[in-house]
Image 1: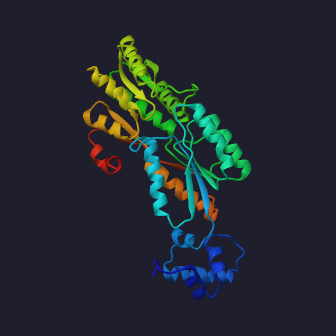
Image 2: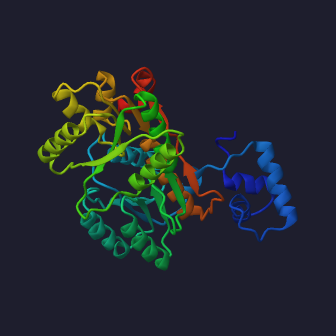
Image 3: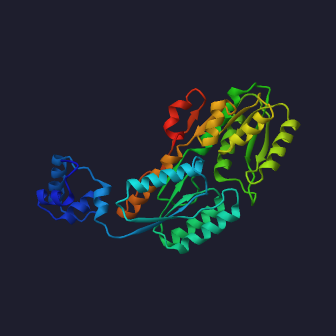
Length: 355
């Protein structure tokens, strides 16, 4: 019965209007104490559970959602976030939502700037934002705030903004986790290295900044000193990047552990493997198709997985709650798990990376 009962059935049994039931379910007030008690009694008797699908079917308005995330292939980190978004759209297909992607190149700040600048004029009902660049994201959010357009973050949280909800790991703590793993995996007298991405515009991604801060904090808290060098990977210029990486390793032979602060750890792993360099431990982020391959063959030592599919799925759910029912969440910042994946437990995540 709990699955079949509808608002109009509740109203009939409680002796009130359907509108009264709707106001009680959505906590909108303006209901008498007697009506409140009658409806709550029926809800308890029927075991009624509010169903977003059932309520949404009767709504005629169409909402336009803009999804501003980096472009990516399936199997890559942002491709997995998009897969979660698409899954949610199928799950909630009875809600009248039109959605459009506003892609940008995550390695090009100017691409992000151009993409974000166009969004306020696209007349969105809500925006889901992959906040790679801090300044560009803050400018977009300020414009959306002025227009009263709600927005939801995936992957990162930007201080000074007012999202309806966010879905991201604690990036600072993720950096500390990487630092601890590097410290455990390498001899105490070995040097370490941290690699980020080289981007057009020369601005680090917001997550990389937070992760680096966490990693630095971890090593500063030790009662002994570890030497940490820094370098960058260029995704846009792979051959040049390969030469730079090999030169860096030649210049720093004492480096035995590398943290890659993004999902491109496989690039380093493949270069080291191709040059028969097997004594360096590499840790990176995200259970992508290529990183999975490298964990399987042992060229990557560990991955921090942030469940990107769940981030995308929950972002759509939050968008629907905000648009249809104006639900204001008390806790808007939802922390995603940070799973540590190594070769031994990789098979336990097959349902994620096999998709």
